[in-house]
Length: 493
Image 1 (tube, one colour):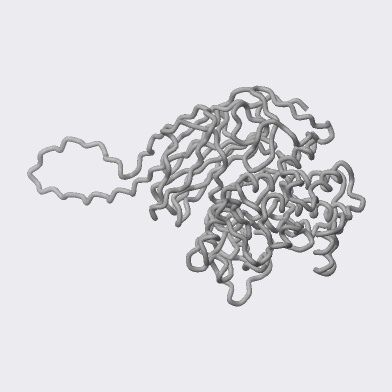
Image 2: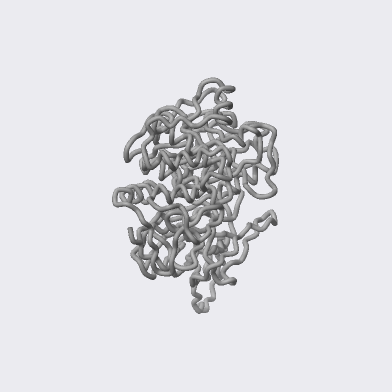
């Protein structure tokens, strides 16, 4: 089990389905514990302070965090807002960027690409992080991960601005300091400030007294020390005082990978990607190609964990290609609230097949009784097991970097995920992801006690150009299969 501080007097022994084994930290919103999921895997459990989850806005925040695609982020696995509210996320072993300190060379480039990828995915889901800083980046075995969506806000028209300012002053944008409406551009400013800190050891506007920091952010030019090019010019553009003049995180990512950050296909949430029907050209220098491969493939590898409830998506919904309307039936929870579903716009072919697995309740074969004069004893019949119905929702696809809802082909690496609706809650489902009939990933996913869906995801895969068939096969407690046909672009570097 990972290392954690010992529990203190008054700390709980268990929270929900999670055994508490140690303390990971404490902040303004609550205490973060190291927990163990029912399957034995470590998780981070954030127990929230009184009042944090007191309104409907917090429920919206959790739902928004669960929509984030699992690109370089710590995934939200579970949450409970009743009683003592808590959030469960996957546990990432490793120091924070704050603890690790200054980076340089290829290490700094990989950090920039991974964190930009994470924020692009966060913004794609309609979420603003609001407190991106070195302490909220974990350097895990698979690469950097952005954590802590506890103060994220959905960026829809219904979101309101509170009188309090949320964030860490040295990394806050001018509009955030003014208490104005914040958006994705606020995170762009914070990302640039963190990159200056990571590359030089100091944030661009200092970290001394609060009045001095605020004055510099509002009026002074950033101090970027010996931050190298081309990262330096990208960061400078991100530190514009006017949020409208900052690039989107999608454009930042394309520039980091060697593109110009300007392309022809709009992407929801800002930013664009350059895509053609069967061939996509991304001008990337040979040296940066290594960075992209390392950061967007190896560093983004993550594992599915059981339900919990912290800052990771237990219910991450992403934009999806369009499928047959018959296969896109909304699932209604026990409380009568229909689960939101996105209307896809592309039309990859998909099909769903299911074949219930025989259970002990299946009717046994009957045999003709032999007449007998002696009295017979009737055996009591076994009570049939509760039936479980599963329905795989439309498979959601995304390509790299940050490509979703492609009308043509998908750029590698390709990622896929979905949710499985269940007629019962509080159960495990076993599954396998297959590409062209070959198993790519297998595992188990939990249907939480307060929900009727399980989140099922795969890794990112560098698939060859051309057509492929992606299949999710649920193998337990019943067998259900869903497939989708995709086209992978040919990419020229």
